[in-house]
Amino acid sequence: MATITVRNLSPTTQRKIKQRAAANNRSMEAEARAILTAAVGDDGFGPAWLAMAAGVGGVELDLPERSMPRDADVS
Image (cartoon, rainbow, N blue to C red; front, top):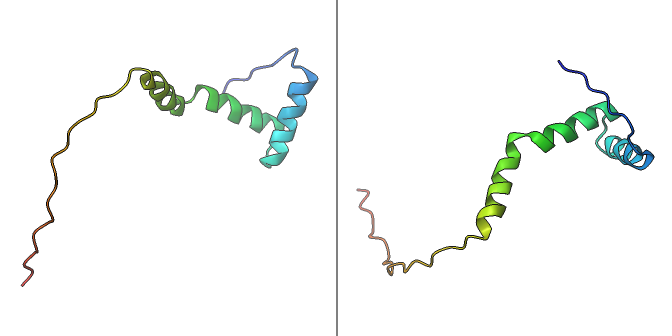
C-alpha cells in the first residue's frame, strides 16, 4: 500500500478535515483516505456524465394511448 505526505496544508483545511473525521467517527488519516477515494473513485463518472449530457437536450416522443389490461384467466 502506498504512503503519501501532504505538505503545506493550511490550518483551516486541517481543522475542517479533523472536524469531518470526528463527525464520521474516523481518524484524520481515515478521513483523508475517504476523501481521496471519493474524489477519484468510479462513482464520480455517472454524475459527471449526466451533468455533461444535460446541456445536449432531449427528444419529446409521442406515446400511443394505452388501454386497460385484459383480465387474466387463472382457472
